[in-house]
Length: 491
Length: 95
Image 1 (cartoon, chains in turn cyan, yellow):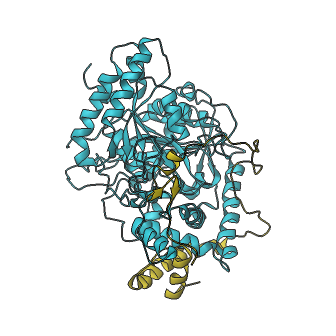
Image 2 (spheres, rainbow over the protein chains, first blue to last red; image 1 turned 90 degrees about the horizontal axis):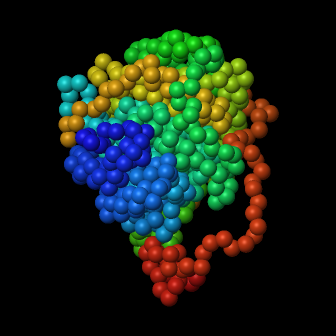
Image 3 (cartoon, chains in turn cyan, yellow; image 1 turned 60 degrees about the vertical axis):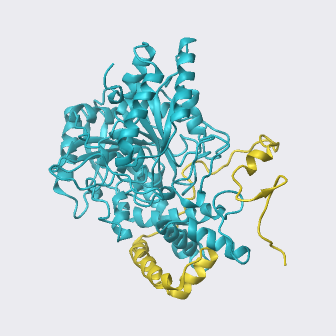
């Protein structure tokens, strides 16, 4: 078979099952593609050549013995936020040094249980704090997409920038990612890939480096809606090791892909038409609305009145939780230690040397909003506004089955363009952060390209635990859009 | 609620982050920029609204209070910056 790396996950799994290709062949094809592309894209921070080949060989042996595991032999990329036994896991932060876990995250363990092969660890913003993959201690990820007639390097989005870039550039069949404020969906939108954040609690957080625990949720970035559904089915499942893991059955999400959307009521929230949004995104949204109408959906104008407060709420809650979660990095039990003259100085020097600028800023904001005298004014108020935002969705979902919005307010921007102004950078997540606060599933589907030939995504938001409707609507959009554009392989 | 250099110094100490003196003023400016943007939350009527602490059921699951894992100090110490005889070695705490 030619061009093995261009296969979708679904087609690759079928080819492996039909023994048209072995996992070793497929894995070697990806490793060769990574070795060629990675010096240019910087998507992987660890390429696990030996482990990948060993896992592939073991998979081929299981296949020969009759294994029909759902991901048997499929090579995947893993975001560096997931702890992987024996393979360096640093959340792309210098403070973790050469940290090499002696245990495996539940989500990745689920993937290996289902037969998948790990190609390596993917670049990301440090501790998942960023929207452009510019805060990684291993350097920026370069988006495989370039604007027409331009050689300028663009961001792949963040924080799952490596996952998105690797999937778009055919450096894995699909990748794991995580989403605290939009970190799966915005990079997916920027790279012409599909990314879903499931309902909070679907994926175990055990073994995933914590950023903001009430918001963090894992999900896949994949080439198609069906691939995302296949991956997510394997990633999900109840885990007693995560007290917020939901004790519910995981449906076979792929069965929802291709299901008729006729008669579904789709909400279109007026508050997502924001000032300064490019006309092209508005037009793409209108096109998506028409496509769903043509597929038999009923379009319902809805209102989510507290939308504009979601980002400021997030920038209290997420830093507050992060400042608490990141207190564990003290240089005593793991990571890099920088000695000072006493214990306090050792802590302070270790943390100053190990954390990057954006992480330090968020720790300081989080510590401030939780400190005596400010807790009520900031943190408690933000938690109350969060209730309001969740209530908005409850009200709207009483009358609609899903909500359609743009994924991000722009296409991929140039590296460095927004690095100087944190608030401008934060605004990237304006359409995605609401579902984290409310715990709802949201998917980004590539829906078209802008005038410069760069991909743009649409987001489908669903009711809690109703990923099936989300996948059905996303597949209808994918079908109608017929998005086939790929980045030219300039690397 | 604008914050000044002294507040940044105090918060940095609370967070155990060494911040050089020349970074205090720029950091105060950056944080004030973000806090000014956050101030818009004061427009929201939150009278009688319960604070949301979790999106899943508030009742945490209980389990038997038994050891489920562990017993392998080598694994626990594998990533320690300094260890000796099965213990972490840390700076002197008690004077």
